Length: 295
Image (tube, rainbow, N blue to C red):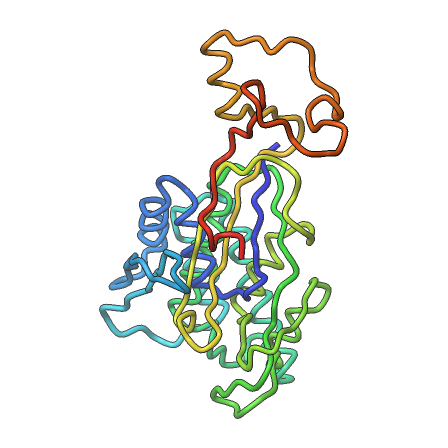
């Protein structure tokens, strides 16, 4: 069984999800570009770059608008997604995430869903971030999707309605029933778009599941290089009984080595718990770490 795991310990945003998922999949760039084209938005495309965050290579995705875009409401976005050539499951979950986002804004402002101006929902990048993140997640072929608890951040955030403590009202609404926490970052780490996508996709929250890691993706966003560096990681994991052989064991098999019966702990480490260092000592086949890698 394959599980897609969304690690949001440094926060989450729509563009970070888009970047990490497209980075994780071998043909993620092509899948993303095809999904954007399938939406049929004139003058809209994506640019994929690399961005170094604390010495770590991450993917950065920017949504480009090459022609003026009208203000769009939820009904407009629903029509766009339904008219696209994306798979039905992508449409269903993508619209579920967009609707969640719109409903949160509606509750915060006390306005009917059809009457409110969706400052974030109406943006083209939010449509692309939401629907295309869902499409990439489904393209991973996982049977389940899980997420870590989400880091909401701290401090204050300023947008069109004023200055608010983190989490801002819409983010707080979306964080209901999710597993969340906060750190002394002094900035917003989880955006409404990111929260909406994670809440729609994740069936459970917790630590990295037990299993074999098949692929890892790193995604950063607009504010990732700031005073509190952030990135999001996605993992594709093979859960269940999946035997993994080390390089050491594979080399021994190739040579036809037979070490005889399995040594007990006392035979391997000696009477005082110290490992033997003779010609018959066994050493790990794992990789060696640099001096500062364990910090």
